[in-house]
Amino acid sequence: MQPEIHCSYRPAPPLNRFVEQLWYWEGVPPSHLKDRLLPDGTVSLIINLAEDEIRAYTGANDDEVRRYPGAVLVGAYSKYCVIDTHEQRAVLGVNFKPGGMTPFFEPAADELRNAHASLSDLWGSAGATLRERVLQAPTPRSRLRLVESELLRQVLRPLRRRAEIDFIIDELDTRQDRSIADLSHRAGLSAKRITRLFELETGLTPKLYARIRRFQRALRILDVADLPWIDVVHHCGYFDQPHFIHECREMSGCTPSQLRARRTGNHVAI
Image (cartoon, rainbow, N blue to C red; front, side, top):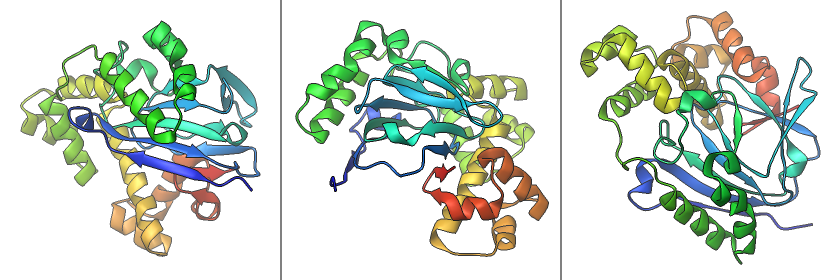
């Protein structure tokens, strides 16, 4: 059996303010054909090194395929997206922090919500050739370094974070029940202005971002403790168990029990 190879690291400053991690994975894909990839409130750059194509599925039965080149930017999703597991034999990725894509790409993040975009469309010839240049690098670590260097070459805007957006992200990551009125008052901007700035930089409204992060918090709790669902409901601030079940269906397409049985990390087998 082919050995599994996995490596990742956080980049050095100034990229570490925008990029959570760069990662590489190579191995035997799972036997099932599709995964639901759960939303986490962030944007990712994905390069399929096994084949020059990335497939995503839509439709009522997740059977309508959309085909993209092998290097794409995946926008922030408001719910799960369905991906092809068999193309995941060798994959490289960049996980941006919330609001972290802004310096490197021309479109605002809200234009890429619930969408994939080809790197060739975003970066021109540099995006079109990136996958082949990565394949020519001899080791997983050198491949990650090449992508890191490309990010620095593609900087379009100053490498600094907007203080108001960082403040709201920190607040919503800490407490998902923060109201827009409270956030706008503390940030010194109108609720309308806060919401628009947040959408432009993260791709999501503050309310939707908070819902996604609360759901991710529930998943993290389940990873460290096999708690009854009702305890997760109370700990994460859901109104009641039906509220959590509704959110679970919205975010994952599954009931809580199905999610617990099928989930591996941020992937749910279907």
